[in-house]
Image (cartoon, rainbow, N blue to C red; front, side, top):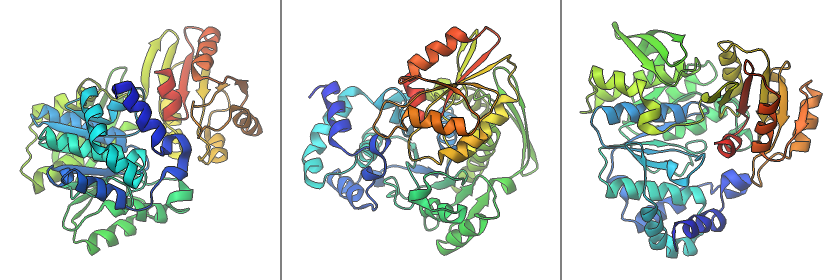
Length: 427
């Protein structure tokens, strides 16, 4: 098979959560362990940092990888889903794995695929571990897919675990309360491995404290490690002042949206703990350059990403309740005459709760992701209308954006959001 044929095989042969939803999930680690065993346990040959959480884990993973890369470490990065190219999921120092590797790996693993029928995600996790081990990375930053306890990535024993925040998403899989969701995310906490919690919350704090105690894992809340933090939003950078153990730190992050402040706090705390508990060293210059060049170093996309300027077109992958809250906060920093929102979602979101949070003053262009898991745009429009959100229907995100651009003046703002997959179609 060539690369195109290989990708078609992986997408169509294997159950894929982003396409079909819950039916793709294997609710134990048996397949992942079998794949890792077949490959000679590459997950045991690499040093890792493991990241779970509802929102922010992708940004935290990319910022961390940028800083570690800038510090001179050969840094692997595994994230999901991808926006444009499958190989975005598996990178070293910002460079995606080669097409040749994907083809070769798939040819090698194919007999095992036929034998155990793994999911798409299980195969991509095994592929990442194999690649990072073969390339002898100094460290790999590994983002969970869904949850934590039963996530395919949860076969590693990392140097550090990070849980960014807990909010409502995938309740039908993870639980209906924040404490239940936190218990699933806390599944990445390992024996004697330090863990950083990005956000304190009265409903989840005790879940993490008890799990860490059970595993003899030293627990750090980012709010305790970082005594003070404030940020200023500028056109090109988010300027952050923080105090860490009575030492003042100033960083300029090119992910210049105010909602990144919490993610930056989590990364600063994680880097502090990493250096205290391992031999990794991050010098001041690496910290500064790593923060200011996240997009350049890691090729991160879809986080308040400015695509065009007149009118301003922004893409953001915010796709759940907490994500919409953050989008609303960021809109306060933008200047515009009218707001146009290109909006599409997948069907397993708490869409009525999300629609109550979206701005009623915006002009909407309702659309749908190009995958079976989509919420049909006709249903979305009807639900939105019940929440006083009005707009026309477009079956493809590119068509929706095209009409929005034709109707917007140069002082308007167009926001493309609602789903990774809608943003991916635009990009």
